[in-house]
Image (cartoon, rainbow, N blue to C red):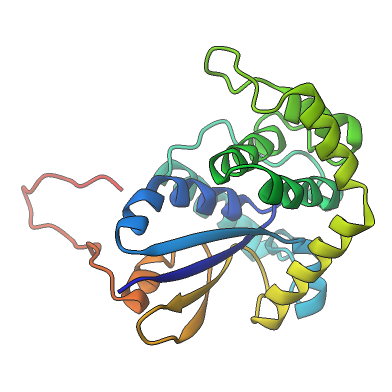
Length: 237
């Protein structure tokens, strides 16, 4: 038992947001099973281009279905007041905040890195201020955490993060990480590359609704979805 999950996500991906919330809820239990999760910022637009995929909303049938599916998926993780921030093609130019997240990942503790993801997803999908310019990125990183006014980063830390996001080093890191996801078969996000510690085998998984397959692959105990007999108490997701 045990293993490693490489999770590739982008701020412009709603289902990446959902996957992040799922990881935040399960990370402690996964650690008890000796499973580590590592989150990698990748550029979804480049993955679509590199794999030949297209965003689901450009196909009318998928766009209609997405309205139902996204609502169900958001409810399942307790996310509310979430909607697309206008033109997703334009908002999806998330290179700057993704580079910033790479910097945060290497210069701050993992819990801070995860909270930064949560904050940037929030400003993207709820506040509708995609942090794709230095000014908006600075605004997002300078905001308090909504719990008593405590800020995630000090002013000097925000300066360092925004500065690093414009440097060649982190441009290269984002490009290399995106290329790694593509080499591992990615055609969208969230993309998972899962390694079983016992067998040393790795397999790819796509989407925020494949965790039961991930757990099965890792040999973890999990509870499967089951229909109940009439009169039984209805189970919540």
